[in-house]
Image 1: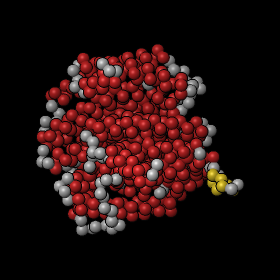
Image 2 (image 1 turned 30 degrees about the vertical axis):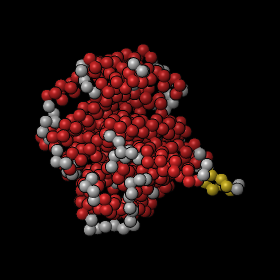
Image 3 (image 1 turned 90 degrees about the horizontal axis):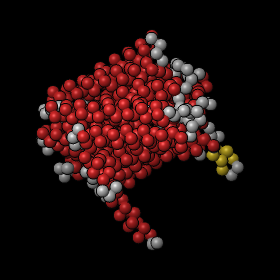
Image 4 (image 1 turned 45 degrees about the vertical axis):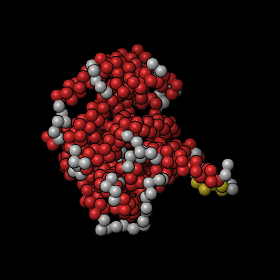
Length: 543
C-alpha cells in the first residue's frame, strides 16, 4: 500500500478517536479503560505475588517501598492537582476562542512542570538511601533497604515522564477528548507486565550479559510503561492545532492563575499521600511481607473507586467547570446531584460484594488466597462508597476554583488518621488492621465534613427526593448483601492451590446473581439509575 494512503488512514483513525464525546460516553470510555487497566493490574500483581510474595518477601517489600517516594512527588506536584486547576483556567480561554492564550498556558505548564519534576527526580536519586532508611523503609533489613534504594533510583524518572503526560491528557479532557487519555493507564500496566515476564530474565546481546535481571527488571518495566503512556497520550493532540513553544510565559494571566491555585491542591494531594508514607513506614516495622500485603489490599479496594468514583467524576468535571463559567449554578447543582446519585448507586453494591466475597477476590492476585490481605480488604470495603463520592465532592469545589476548603479539611482529617495509625499499631499492637482502621476513620471524617459544607453552599443539592433515592439504594444493597453472603457460603471456595479457572467462575456467579438482584430491586423501587442499564441489556439481547 502506498505510503501516502497509509498516512491518510492513520490521520483518519486519529481524527475519529479524537472526536469530542458527551459526559455519558466519556464516563463509559473511562470506566471501560479503567476496567481493562484493573484486569491487567490484577494479572500484574498475580505474577509478582506468585514469583516473590512467598519466596522473596524482602524483595517484594523493597519493590513496594521503592514506589512510595516517586509516587509521592508525582501526587504532590502533578496528578489530580494539575488537572483540576489547569482545566478550568484552560477552558475559560479555549471556549471563549482565545486559543493563543490557551496554547501559551499549555506550553508554560508543560515546561514548568517538566523542570520541577526533573529536579525532584534528581533529588530522589541523590537522597534515596536516606529516604528509604528514615522515611519509608526503616524496618526493612539491610539487604531490603539496599534493593529498595536501587529500584527507587530507577523509578525516580517517573514523575518527570508523568508530568508531561498529565498536561497533555488534561488538554484533551478540557476539550472533551478521552480516547487516548483512557488508553494510557492500561499501557502503563503492560509495560510492568513486560518487565515481569521478560526483563526479569535479564538482557543479553552478542553473548554478553547487559543486565542480570531479577526483580530489578520489574523496575525497568515500570519506566517502560511510563514512556509508553506518554507516547500514546500524545496521539490525542492530533488535530487540536496545539502550538507548543519551548518557553515559559510568566506574564500569561492563565499561567499565573494556575500557579496560584496549584499550591493548595498540591498540598491537598500531598497530605493525602502522607498517609501512605506513614502506613508504609509502620508496616515495614512488622513481619516480612506486611508491606506488600497491605499494599495489595489497598490496591484491590481502590479498583472500584477508580472504576466508579474517579472515572465518572473525571468525565463530569469539564462539564461542571463549564456550567460555572456560564454562570449557571442551578444547572451545576442539578448535574452534580445526578452524577452523585449514579456514583452511589454503582458503588454501594460493589462495596457489599467486596466485603462478602473478599476471599475470592484476593485469590485472584494470590494463588491459594491470603488471610491478611483478605482481612484488610474486609475493613477497606467499608470505605469504597465513601471514597467513590469523595472524588466528586472535591471536584465540586475545584470547579468553582476553590482549592483551599478541601485542603483544610484534608489537613484536619489526615492528622487524626496519622495519630490513630500510630496509636493503633505502636500502642495497642493491632498491626496492619490498625492501619486499615485509621484509613476508615479518615475517609468517614473527610467526606462527612465535605458533604456538610457542600449542603450549605450548594442550594437544592441534598433534597428530600435525593435522600429518599439513597435510602432505596441502601435497602436494595442490603437485600443483595444477604443473598451474596449465602452464595459465598454455598459455593464454598476452598483456598488450596486453586487456579484462576477455579476461582473466576464461582466469583462470576456471585457477582452476576447479586448484581441482577440489585438491578431488579432498583427497578422495583423505581430508581431511575437502573433504566439505562436495563435498556442496554434489552438492546444487547435484541429484546
